Image 1 (cartoon, rainbow, N blue to C red):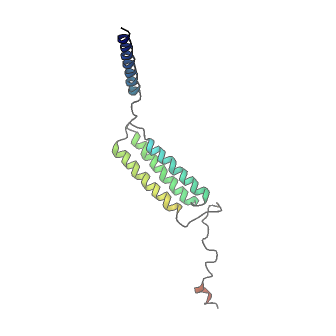
Image 2 (cartoon, rainbow, N blue to C red; image 1 turned 180 degrees about the vertical axis):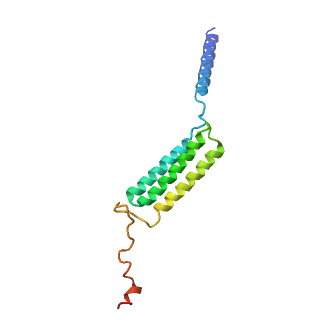
Image 3 (tube, one colour; image 1 turned 45 degrees about the horizontal axis):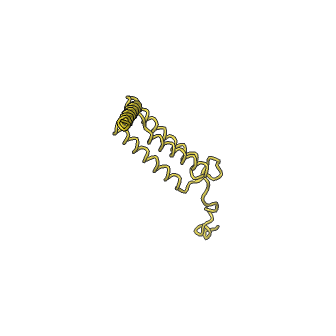
Amino acid sequence: MKTKMLLGILALAAAAAGAHAQSANMGSAPNPTATPRVDQREANQERRIQQGVQSGQLTQREAARLENQHGRIERAEDKAKADGKVTARERAHLGNMQDRASHDIAREKHDRQRDMDHDGRKDRQHADRGNTERHQGKRR
């Protein structure tokens, strides 16, 4: 008799837990306009741009160009969300735009343009550029 009562209580507890889990899942239906991957990549790329400016790897002009590119991605994301659902095609388009932006950030950070003194102008690579061997022999 105790065994039957214990089994009945366990069955009720299992049924209640299953009903609770089902209602919890129903309340957290995926948001069709949520773009967490896009948002995370956007935050990472913004961080990379800021780090590049702080380290002098990006000039102000390069950073402004990259920020404008991110503005275009944000507008495309807003446009995709406007109808209440971000389709797989729209997500792929946003991903491609972000891939391009990531490539552009890497390219700009690793080119030879620098602004190490943070004055908004590119630093000169060689201060004595006009004093090369070719020009030394042509003195007047």
